Image 1 (cartoon, one colour):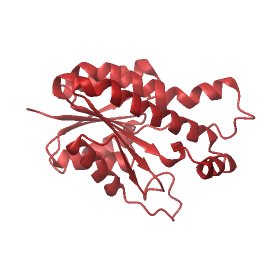
Image 2 (cartoon, helix red, strand yellow):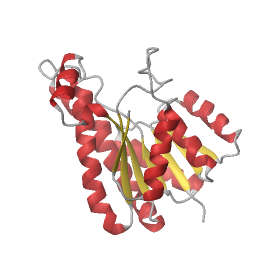
Image 3 (cartoon, one colour):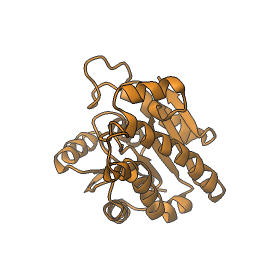
Length: 229
């Protein structure tokens, strides 16, 4: 039976590595991002490796846009087996003491509203395939006084809250969907991944290591979370 991976939030690091990992295992791959140029480059690279690929321009913070991308992926590639949510939100809200209400709402647009919208739209496919939802997250979402202090002092309060909300959401989705045969898992990335927008020349983590962690979660379908550091 054909298997389809849909990656939302394509970038040069983790999501591209996940697409290569699953593509090498025989998955067809759908890629979703805001910029057509990045999608075209990634599509070419995967097709050169023999992977069937389709691309979709959409905004992960807009529920209607992301639902449309999920439907388009289903129509182009077939029922979705794995939804990989790599989109990240909240990074523009640096300090809650000066943020306005609109900025506070934006903290959750991608990490909660967008993710839930994508899961809702893909759910019939995921249930039918006994598929999976795989979520990229960051260590700022962990509950720790040290991490909280770092996030507050570095102007990463919005990102930390978005990641914390996503961390909780993964657990809730896992509990809700496990009886339906749908696996939900999260890789918490504690560090900077080489080749990403966060890399300032001192990154220590390989995107392939994160992709390997996602594959291990998907294969085992037991632990909800893994941590890469």
